[in-house]
Image 1 (spheres, protein in one colour):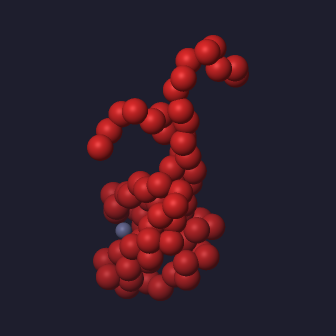
Image 2 (cartoon, helix red, strand yellow):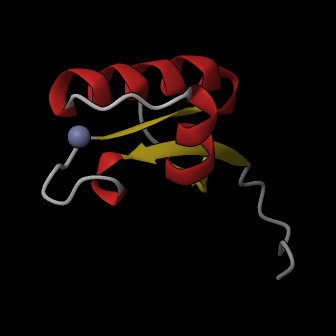
Length: 76
Ligand SMILES: [Zn+2]
């Protein structure tokens, strides 16, 4: 795909979804790439508090974080 001269900026964001780990849980969070550490920690806390399971940050990163493209200019 080429960019047809439009000046839309594309940024990568990170999304973590708990529902891949525990069926029925709808915890989902999205953040900017820069905030990855915080995202992992919040997800880890969630799993620990809500599901009583301990994951390492690496495991969460590996299994539950997906990169998504977002178009800048909308939101906030
Ligand atoms: Zn959950």
